[in-house]
Length: 124
Image (cartoon, rainbow, N blue to C red; front, side, top):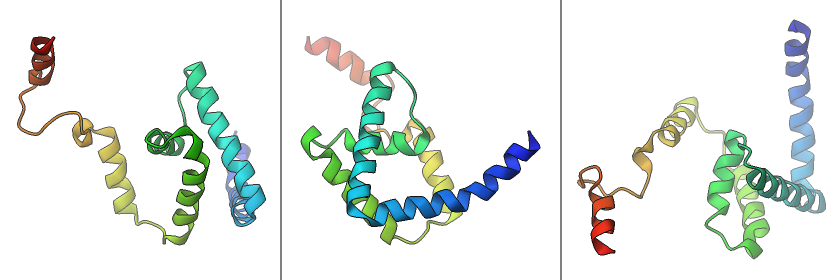
């Protein structure tokens, strides 16, 4: 098992290099984007959980019309390549924010828990 863990560290630079090459060539990049979108759709249809990075991408793509998903995803990938690496503090803060329900826009600040549900019931 230790060999397996050590081998994974050696493969990471190779995978990164291949990924960068795929991202640079437009035809390969579009192929990878279509493949990723298909994976997201199939995983959701089967009720499977997506990896953390893809969960964010899927949440982002849910707000986009289905016809434009590939185009918007490609723009996001290209924009992400141009940005410098985020610091560890920012990555950790973003992960904490995702895990906590505080950033969810469904709840208005100042409303007591359950007040929105009660208002909906009264509206019916």
